[in-house]
Length: 267
Image 1 (cartoon, rainbow, N blue to C red):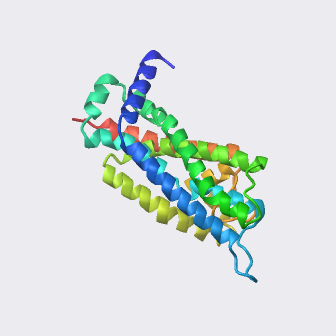
Image 2: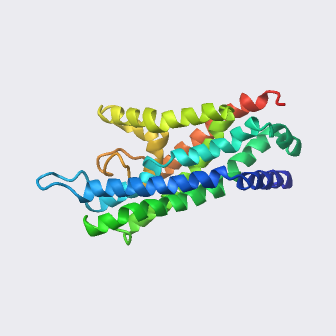
C-alpha cells in the first residue's frame, strides 16, 4: 500500500471512530440480536407435543446463530452507508477531497476503513446472538452445539460476513449520497424486498438456486447456514463463490458510485 493510500485510509478510519453513531448502532444491534436469538431458539426448543419442530439438533443451532446475517445485516449496512453519506450531509466531503484529491483512492480508503468496525460489529453481534439463543437450545432443545467444529466455523465466518456488509454499505452510500434515501433503501431491501424475493424464488424449483446469488443468500452461503431453513432445504453456494458474489456487489456499487456521485462537483 502506497504512502498516500495509507494516509488516506488512516484519516478515514480516525474520522469514523471519532463519531458516536456507529457504537450507538452497535448497542441497538446487540439488544436486537439477543432478543431475536432468544425468540428463534424458543421456537425450536418449545414445540407443542405432537407438532414437528421446524429444525432440530445442529441445524437448529446453526440457523439460530446465522441470525447475525439473517436479520442483523441491516446494522453494518447502515454503519457503512453513514460513513459515506455523512460526508455529504455535513459538507465535509470538500475537506476530505482536499486531503485526498484522488477520488478513487478516497473511495477505496472509505471502503477499507470500515473493515475494523465491521469486524467489531460481527464479534459483538455473534456474541449477542449466542447469548440470546444458546441457553434455551442447551436447556430445552437438543443442545447449543458450541463445541461443534462446523458451528464454530459458522460463527467465525458470521463475523467476516458482517464486515463485508459494512463495506457494501459504504458502496451503497457512494451511490445514494443522501443519508435518508440510503437508509430507506437499505431498510426496504433488507426487511422486505430480499426476504420476499428469496422465499418466492424458493417456491419455484427452476429458480430456487438463484436466491443464493442475492446478497443475503450469498452471505448465508458463506456462513454455511440460513435462517430461512436448514442447510439441506436451502440452496447454498460454495463458500469461495459466496465471497466472490459479495465482493462483486461491493465492487459493482463502488464503481457505480465513483462514476456518478463522486464524479460530480462537490461543494
